[in-house]
Length: 94
Image (cartoon, rainbow, N blue to C red; front, side, top):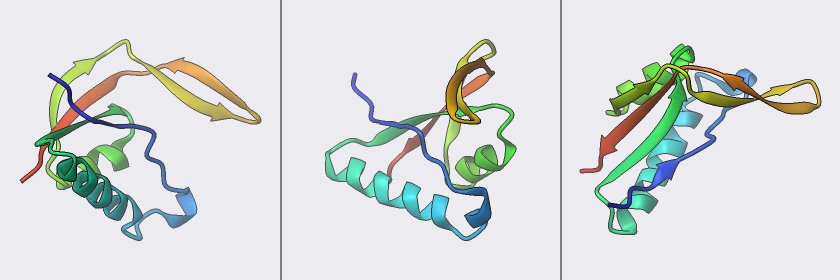
């Protein structure tokens, strides 16, 4: 089965708490539903507590945990790959 993946959602730290992440998720969920899919998957670092709280609030549930996952991070002018526990979360679109 094919399932759309929400990837690389980020909100500037200066703009967090303003509902931007929630609005972006709602928009992409509407697009995915319009494509005819009934669920969406995303990956989030386990240590990213604010993002995990947001996704759980929006109805995403953990499908699996990869304790040795990889994540991309910006360090100075470079994009680097780091080991990070990663949660796969799914939302059934109603």
